[in-house]
Every structure is written in structure tokens, then in C-alpha cells.
Length: 306
Ligand code: 3EB
Image 1: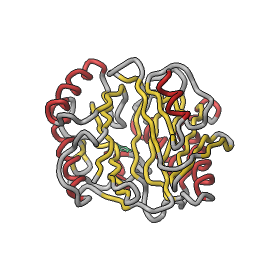
Image 2: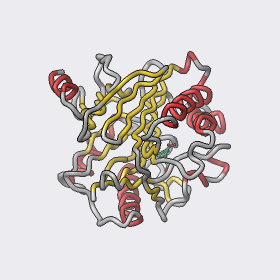
Image 3: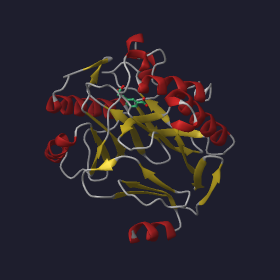
Image 4: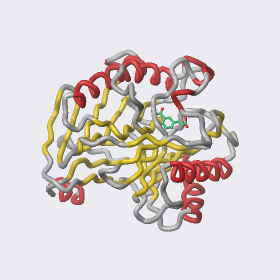
């Protein structure tokens, strides 16, 4: 795609993501996200910084850095590592070892995409196993607090775990949602190791809030089981609560790119209509993805600038 080549040729291009594309690029700044886009056959997301960018490969990691920012990504095939727990542990060990020796060692935001996220019953559910492995791989690296994150299931044929992150040479500030129990304090019913993420991270270096995957979770419980519109409404209330908690003004605008992850393809048009109506002008990328609790139909993450 010509757009991608042009972007990669520009100084300052830190990362380039393809959603739903088939062709893999060798440039370490490029990632083929395993989630299909409903909006177009293929959609690009481009990260740019105001400085020259260097990039490379380190073991299974692909990375780039410039202007105080660091991008790093790892893709592991679970068949090489023995299931979601071990694979997550290996991925996070490598990311932690790499980021730990960089000047940009403040990890602000992480995205996790894995196959068949809801497969398995109770503690055997693959997402819960991922949570255990993630915590093992993190070790005490995030002892002072977790980054903002998203964890979503993809429908790819290969059991690929994709993890990518944004780190900085300046720390961010973690933000929690007063309407929700912090994820790392979820009770035992959600797994033996609670999920390791903050609800949002405020980035002073960017004058922005990085918003974690946000769904219709109130307290620690899923609200409005199997009711798409009610889950969307509740999710918007949660997003507004996060903005308020971060001390930001209300609302999203044309500068606030969001992603909506939709479990069932048949719901994509409704999610799109709802968000167009409720958040006019806001760029929303609608992706086919499974939320980590089977009863949740939709989840939203993204950015709000100050
Ligand atoms: C929730 O509120 C929904 O495991 O990294 C949202 C964002 C969710 C991140 C993660 C999980 C994660 O619990 C699920």
C-alpha cells in the first residue's frame, strides 16, 4: 500500500499498524494486527514522533525509538511455547528485559491480542491463563503500578500472541475509575491472578490520556449481559468517569481516536451507528474482537488529548 510506504519513508514514523491486511512487512516498525476491521478491507494506524527514529530486532522483539519514545512488539506462536500462560510469560519476560535497559523504560500502554480468548471453562479459560503468565513475565517490573492495557481475542487461524507497547523516558500517571474495582483487585471468581492493568494512563509528555479497554463493568461485575445497547451506554458512562477521574473536561472529539472491539460481526453496524450518533466526529475504528468475559459484547479503548 502506497500510504504505508510513504509513511515509513518519513522521518519520525515510530510504528505502523495494519488491521486486516495480509502482507507482512519486514520493517521492525510494522505490525500486522490479527484483528479484522469492519470499516474497510484494511486500515492503517501510524505513530509519529518529532525526531529521527532508529529501529531494530532483538530476539523475538521488534522495536523503534526516537524523541524519548519507544515502541516494542513481540509475536509468539503458542504452539512453540505450550499454551497461553507460558507464551504470555515468555513475551513479557522479553519485553521487560528489553525495556528495562532503555532510557525509555516507563511503559505507559500495552495492547495484547490472543486467539480463542474465551475458550475453556472456569480457571481453564484461556484469558485467565494469559493473566497468570503475564503476571509471571512481568515479575516485579511494575511493582509501582501497571500500565494501561487492552486484552482482546482475535479470530486468526494461527494461535498467535501479539503484544505491543508504548514506553517513554518520562513517567505517566495511572488513573483508575471510581465506578469500577481496580482490575488487579478483582475477586477470585475472575481468576487466580487478577488482570495486570490500570484503567488509564495520563501522559504528560503527550498531553494525553491513554484509555485502557473499557467495557460495561460496574464494580467488578459485568452489567447488561447480552444487551448491546445497554453495554454501549454503560461503557460511555465509564469512559466519562475516567476522563473526570483524570481531571479532564468531558467528551471526545475529532482528535480522540477510539477503537471499538465487537464480538459478533452482526453487531458491527449497530455499534458504528450508536457511536456516530453519541460521539459525532470522533474517529472510531471498529474491529472484530472478543472481549475477555464471554458476556461482554463490546469494549472501547483509545486516546483523549488535553
Ligand atoms: C475489564 O474491565 C475488561 O487484561 O489487560 C480491559 C482492559 C479488560 C485490559 C487486560 C482486560 C484488560 O476487566 C477487560
